[in-house]
Amino acid sequence: MDEPTSPPAPAPAESGWAQARGSESLPEVHRTIAVPAGASFWRKVLAFSGPGFLVAVGYMDPGNWATDLAGGAKFGYTLLSVIMISNLMAILLQHLCIKLGVATGRDLAQACRDHYSRPTVYFLWILCELAISACDLAEVVGSAIGLQLLFGIPLVWGCVITAFDVMIVLLLQHRGFRYIEALVITLILTIGGCFAVELMVAKPDLGGVFAGFIPRLEILKNSEMLYVAIGILGATVMPHNLYLHSSIIQTRKFVQNSAGKAEAIKFGTIDSTFALMFALFINAAILILAGAAFHGNGHQQVGEIQEAYHLLDGVLGVTFASTLFALALLASGQNSTLTGTLAGQIVMEGFLNIRLRPWLRRLITRAIAIVPAVLVIGLFGESKSTQLLVASQVCLSMQLGFACWPLMRFTSDRAKMGEFVNPWWIKLLGWSITLVIIALNVKLLFDILLPAPWTQWFYGLLGLHPSA
Image 1: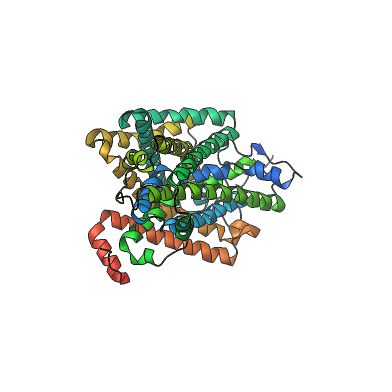
Image 2: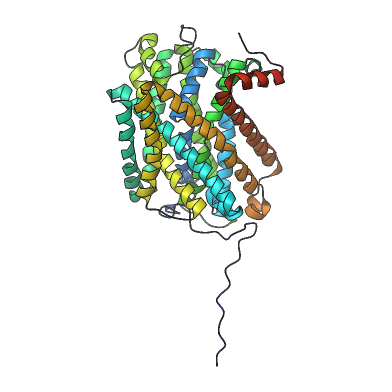
């Protein structure tokens, strides 16, 4: 009589991880874009180009516009150094996302699920969903403002119209991931073209612009300037981009060995660095435009997007400046919603290891963003749109540290990353950036929620005095 056979033992978890790797990240497009073997340097650059631009749109979304406008209108070109430093931080963090995705085959959400306990995973998932919804909210409102300025559509209806971009994402992803990348790059070039024309018309002082990229101690000594600078920092690095990039880098079909992974990290970093430098141009252009058009012309208090739109034609003396500004805003908001819906899918599938139909997942994400926007605008009027953008940045600030910390934790662990573990100097730099981002975002949060007492205590602690 045969002895009963026991069921096969489950496969052990991979070294360094609490659980074995689950399903592929974004399985419908996973490893669907071929990387030609033995191709030239430039052909490989082209093969890996795309994911960096999808990530870069989060660094130029409508949530950044208010802080960049305020910084340029109030202080001219001084805060350009803050935009540059923020961008350099982003380049390093996105490089680490590429390393995580390539070396482990996991996106950041999957890595959190495989490492942390279930209560911690649910906690991180809820925070991330709130952050994505908050970012989505800013993008919905930004697109609606652009539609209103260009076509006179009321903000409420503009918010509803933005729901249809879900169908665009579904259609393009079904046809191939390259189509989504092409649309995003086209919209980015539209934004860049609009601001290039705006800057030629505004004729900023080039000497002042170059001087603005040099960090100044004045930024720390002037409390009002420091507040705006922290706002720029807090609005720059988007937490959902860390999840997004670690996933979409895996759309490339690179060789699964040490040499192939090293090459993927190299070319993925070239792609993201170039794309983020373009984002630096966009954010700097917004601040430079505000500095040239409003600072010194009696409009230092311009902080709302609609106000800037109505002033631009008169200040610059041309009839198309405002139209280009609104067109760039619409392209920015629409671009960001395309990548935000992908990030929502990655986060839900990665943290919970469940799959919903893509159209259902994106409708849920869009509804969570549109409903509060429509309610607030409908109940309190269109004047509250800027407050909605500010509120969305507060939510993002609260979540950012919870994305940066596990990213640094995983990529600094040799058991998880193997030969691709962070060297000591990246660990030092990365942890320093993470702690600075957390500290500045916490301060920004308290500044907004408790402006007067917190600001007085903070500047007293530093021995600084608010500017007159």
